[in-house]
Amino acid sequence: VIPASRRPDGTWRKERVVRDGYTPQEEQKLYQSRGVVTRQNVPLCPGMDNEEVLAVQRMAQGTKGKSAKRNEKKREKKQADGLANQLEGLSTACDKPSDTRIASATTSHGPASTAAPVADRIVPEDPAARLEKDIKKLKKKMRECDALLEKQGKQEALTEPEKEKLGKLPGWQAELTELEAKAAAG
Image (tube, rainbow, N blue to C red; front, top):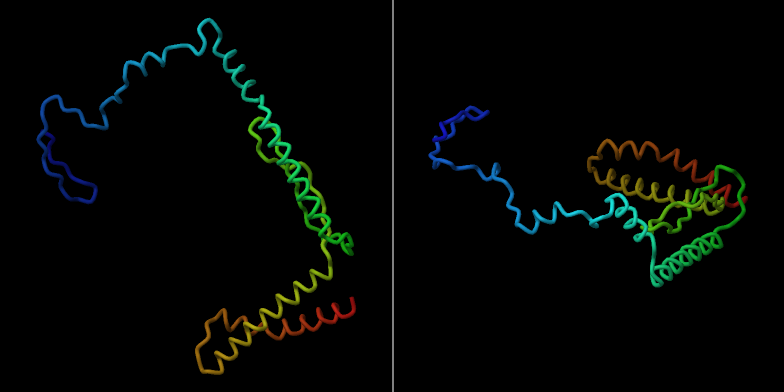
């Protein structure tokens, strides 16, 4: 008989009647067949040191078959071609050193064939493209502000972030005219 006991929240558990010799499932040993028990005690290779066997297995994993080598070469070539296409697509002109982005090329090597960074290359960014991108961003923000002004004109209540956004509108307009002047001059 397991006596009644109190739970942490103050309620009572009922008294439980169990047979003599009963062992709860959590406390029972895990069943292992005879085969499993005998395999646990067998050395990896009888007559050879286990450390040597493990070393030989590691070396065997490092060797690759013909098709694995061929696939690895294809993968490396594909990555190299992709990197070359990226570099051709970008302009090489760069006005400021701050207008650069870091791109890392990766290749696969080693027995597990995991990708790892090979080298970091500096890829220049086109200042004109950056300028156009900034202009697009500002125009989008101003369109959103126009929608908020229409909402305000319909006597609908604005939230605090929306009011803050409307407060930034004059600054964005000034910045847009400045950027458009740069784009026209450049």
